[in-house]
Length: 499
Image 1 (cartoon, rainbow, N blue to C red):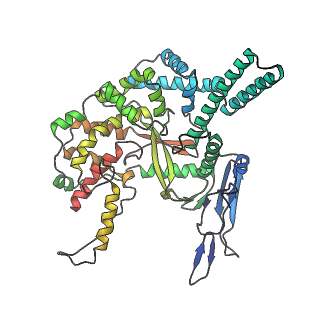
Image 2: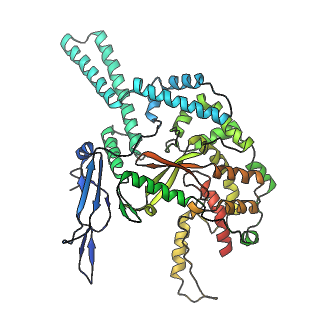
């Protein structure tokens, strides 16, 4: 019924089961829901639902909150892929890039050119590209006017040419419109077919409603005030990514981690990349992944490679020559992805970092170089994040081992369930660098890793708007290609220690 009527189920915060019966043998069910349609979303773009305490009824009352204001704050700049389909896009990028003069470090020059280009694209979008839906409507009206004139005066040559021109303009506008809403909806599985702009538009609106954080559980109960929610989130992750106490090093690392990285492999890891290696790393990354604070994704760099290649190569090369980052070059946005439906506490969200694409090129090059080495120095017990291994193998193996726990075995059987939740976010940097050094990675490589870790700055995207700006002193971020390999190398201490 809800699918037939076009209803969307509003995420409900608070109690998951809304109906309860019985005292000794309790039965709980989810019976009560809030349903809205697309017209409701158009009228109330900020809607959410929470449960209230049971009093005289077996049901939790539902409170549906609907407002026009999202209370999210200013939205950061984001490059729109549909811009590249406009005939004047490449010219505006080329002219702006060449006219921007900056002096200093190549990283600084690249950042200044991107800042200037951001302003140019905003103005161009407002004056030339325009609102794509209005452009489609204008082209449809122009075509209808020409065709009406043809019906009145007959198929004259000039009118037929105008009709062909209007048809071409309309088709181009429809193609750009479809691409625009497809990018906004994040629908990647649907690539070709009939025009799906209305479908993409609906999915975008539903994502906007369901993806917002309206209520969170705090130490003192539910938090619903937008300002308090933002402050609560920033305080939580500032504490999480701060080292609470110095790490006490034991002899375990020295006793179980062998020196396995050779001098030839260290030379390969720390060599200055060629222009072709940098280009290969850029074109191997997902062009449509979400951008960082500068707003430019991989699709921009791949599309405009002939224009920006020289400055990008110089900015990447300077790191491998000097081993440092300019301030805020490694700044990132962090988004919270719900792990479970109706997530209402921060432990139920997965933090994903969206770094600037120009920064991610460096970890990508290092990850590509490190992957073949990590494959043979990381023990086969670890199957996650390693190319050629599947994490599902250990899931099946663990299931089989549990089935055999009650079988007689020489020496007996024992099963250990180790809770490593939040380990990815709380890994000690000094411990990680100690493990890398013990494996045989040279000082230059470990210094690069230390620079990548210590230069990280994070702002949290809360309901689409950034809030807070803080540094980290522990943990590796989920979102760049190098972090999983570093985590696996540090986890070798646990793996080899158990063995």
